[in-house]
Length: 528
Image (cartoon, rainbow, N blue to C red; front, side, top):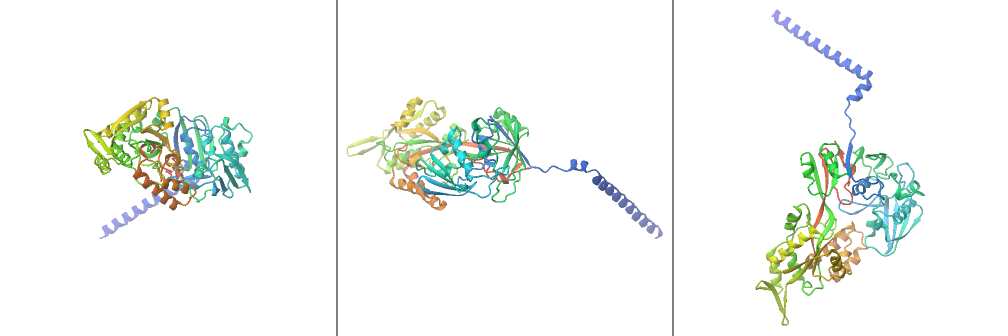
């Protein structure tokens, strides 16, 4: 018994010795930490979130001067416009807190109170007027935005009256250009300047060299929703070619690039990267001449639409890297919420013709009315210098002939092609357009449109919607336009291009790029 007691006493003593030793070590470390603050700093992990972006062909950080699409997109976090666009292309307020259309050619815009430039000076109506006049006087990517502005008047400092030369449907979509400071540039040769404009946005330029530009959070940003920006700094690195930028992304020197290259994975691989695709604004379509003897018949236009396999065109010509298109504003607009898809159905095409009195005999579709027989023989015009469209035209010719519609494919010179477009002396023609941000459909469905298409109800709706700002009512009107369009088929939208935002997996957040800006909801991005 005595032996066991001695044993227990020894164990307890040993534990006390060890505990005291641990206490002394920790105490010493604590003293060292208090004495040597410099060493402690070096052992603390840096929690600053820094995003590194690669840009090729950099020209100028000034958003009114640059022609670089990446800088134009990036400028939305630096330089605020009067109005901005959501990720679904809805108009939202930015520097402006109100806008109204007082008559067909007059807009009133009121600025927010207490807006500041990054240097603390006030943003006023004078800055807006100076920006518009500067764009009108020079060559800018925003020149078309202000081309219809006749004059700008300042009312009570923060309210601006914009007078147009003529009525323009959805003109408010033009007011998305960045506003610059009059006091910073007044009297300078603006379009030769290399100076970074003062910022009103989330971030500001703090340093710039020929190789890189650094952005930091702008403490004078008005921050309407009182959001916490998770990215502390943004570093822009410039490269001679996109290939150089891809290599830098691949080895981890940068975090993000924007590109329209469809096979970007061939350069950087797929491991460790996210590719965020979004619809581009480049739309190709077939215009059907609705005044043509055959194409004025709606069942013929419907049958052609059913006979064209857009998915096959996308896979054959674009290796499935483009988006199939169904409507002129299906690039992501909130006014077109349906899924764009191919209407391809050969049996439905034949049935549509048969229901309208056409019969297929001896390899031809024919229809006899009033002792006169018509045959489905049509021509399709394409610009011979556009190799991609020629391939598409050849596929369409093949697909239409598969259901018995005879097609004569005219591969013409560019000058002849332009004459066809101008004079509209074609049955069908493959052409394209770079969609604006506005939902205006006048180009496609208004007076003197490419298809010579007329519909009284659509004309009436187009006259209504240009004066409607209520979102729900606009949707209702556009749904009716879409319904009529799908039934009457004045055009066959084919496909639109794809853009990509490519970034490393350490970048997180609600990343929803679109054509207006790749940096939608940028305040919620975070780089780990």
